[in-house]
Length: 140
Image (tube, rainbow, N blue to C red; front, side, top):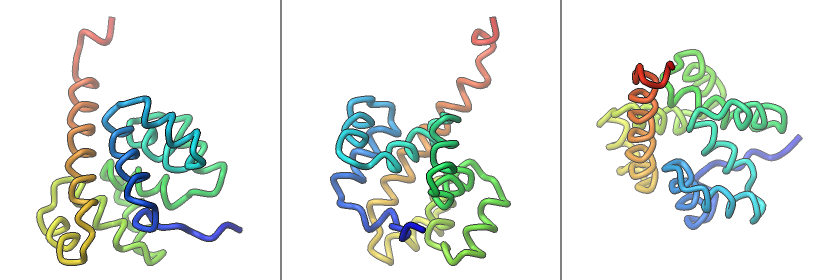
């Protein structure tokens, strides 16, 4: 069984590449894959609603990242799972992505400032996804 590596344990360059991949910049997704971070690439893609990436996370034992992706989307069961498995900081990151000022304040107080930026990037991606789902022109 693999040792869990928390997001904040990754080098900041990897986290910044993840953030850019979430923003849709494919060259950063490729960078993550080519440099040995397929789980981070899959997580970024799962946030972008890529079902294959989500399934990859499950298949290769990154359940916490798949459930963080679900929690970011507002899945209460995923939030509960994170809480039950002592991943409260992941819960807080998910709530920050949903716009919680309280969660962002917690991240700031605990020197997890990158994840405030991450939350803002993810929030923009979620808004984009919502607009795309609601665009009736896409249903032709």
